[in-house]
Image (tube, rainbow, N blue to C red):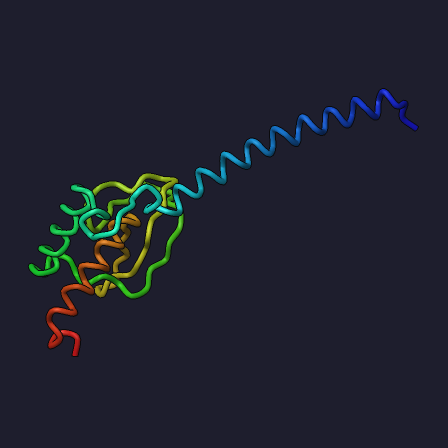
Length: 139
């Protein structure tokens, strides 16, 4: 049987260890929330407030590429996960860094492509917007 002082020392050691683990978990949870919710820092009521200059520019470039048929319509099935190797986003053509969220899909010609979360959202919105303006293409 342990002495009362040994029990107290053991308990104090465990408390300190648990506090360190809690601090680590809180930090990881906070980072995960920021990574999983790209809209966290964007607020506003109208579409002009939601998109800042960079995203608005991206939206216009994606619409232009869709109209010129240099970018196919957004895919219907997408798998999301953390990037393990560096890839190039099919939408913005910038690198997707390892550790960040990437969206993977198979193109109509059978090749795999990847995109950032924001790029995919803009691509889907632009695809839906163009399809709603030209109903003959959707039939």
